[in-house]
Image (cartoon, rainbow, N blue to C red; front, side, top):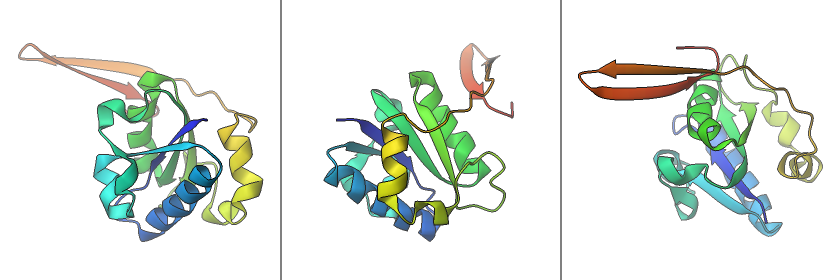
Length: 146
């Protein structure tokens, strides 16, 4: 069994619809599903809600369903745990994403390669940013922004 994370932004109904379809497919194929609490309720995926801190622990891959903003948010959740991230452009720009919603029409053709780690991978350079203010340290991992 592989644990897979889904991150659908609440303001994009298509993202929630795709997340529900993907979650159903994953569960039917014996995989665990996790969705950050903040995104789970709006997507109708409360059964898979977990806190941000626990979201990516033990997750092999996280599917980001949105635009570049969602992808950057997903990287913050997934990168510290080493989970791979796949972006589906359900936003406006999609510069950082690799798939379009129509690429997911046949989940049986796409998801096995993603979940099993057989899809082609593109390594991205990451930066770590640490800011200390009044004794409090804020740490962030950066894909293309600081």
